[in-house]
Image (cartoon, rainbow, N blue to C red; front, side, top):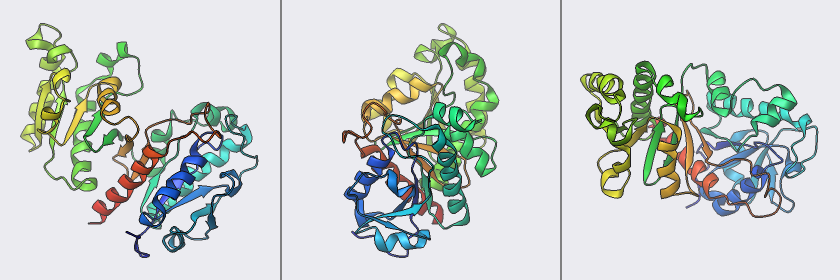
Length: 328
């Protein structure tokens, strides 16, 4: 089905041009064409040769061109694209493209933001990027203090409470306030962005067998359980704390709409097992919709024609669907 010309397009950032971002953008357009209006923000010279493209001056032009060419909102970069070799001179422009996409989404010109992968070290070395990653910078641009990362595929939506920290630091980082805020943001996002009011939220324990009544740890009794009881009193549909090793098989997933895990691998292993290529990274709690493919810049294969656009296509589709849910 060809997209309606009146539908607002998704803004796709270029990400790190020396990575696979430009080629998966071109491949995503080739597979989607007019079925999903989106436009790419970046330097047209960084796209693979031979890709049909149409430079646009306004996002509103994207829908009428996307069936025949990749709509491109030009953003000049100072250095050429060298696959696998990030240029320090391009770092500031990568950051500018992210800010430009957010501005377009905040103004309503774009339906959502989908971000291609960045390389944090390249941005720090080349432009003094002061944020740990995409998510924190997007929170800054959106003017919010706390956001939540969700990993999603058709069979599972899961949110880690703690993310990129050593496993040994998880128990200390896991506070009642952090857990409570994460679940509340998740519940609001399920209603607003996924059209699931009253979502059933399954919460994993921290320890094996969810602590087994205190025999294998007391966090479930002393911290997690009381937080969940308080949230139930607020009207949230909470299951748990559950043993993480029995909550991700098919029958278990049928009992809930979204899962909340205590740490990174507890959340990401099931998603990547269920749908390794099609997982999507979603940032909840922003004043605009943001999705991203669930992979990095892949410098080792950049420019070799090997990059798989499946996750980016899933991220673009989810961005469109979330934007439609918010609009409704």
